[in-house]
Length: 184
Image (cartoon, rainbow, N blue to C red; front, side, top):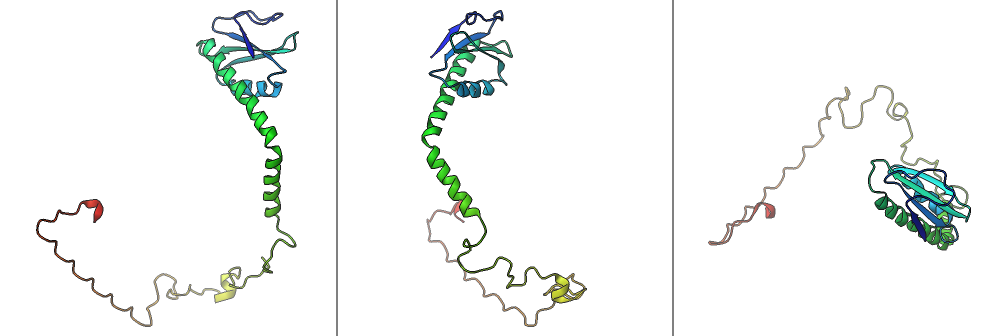
């Protein structure tokens, strides 16, 4: 648990400033890396000072940038310290599963012998996609379907079939409500 003090831990050299708060954490309950992670998240909100005291506790001094309430900041810091501690507990519990998932993802991403099961070679180009334009159609040739200048579609050999006319809509029965815009 954290102990709060308005004047700081025993042996602290700094004088308390209005709005600042001291927190003291037992390192047997809160790992030091969890407290450092919590402190890092607060560097944009407050001045954060850390000190290891003679009792083996980590003292955290918070002084808000805007001169706001140190008590509010202390409560938020205590919540974040608990959050970081719990993240490490969950991370330790899930370490094996996480390593297994990442390992399978890396193995699945490898391209080499035995990975391509269907016998296809990724260097083959059966559709000729990698063949340069000049080799396929000759230098200065227009794209298929364009005139020789490459600007307009070439005339079709056969005219397109005429579209069939749409059937006429049936008249609405008398007294039926008009359809709204969304249903049209």
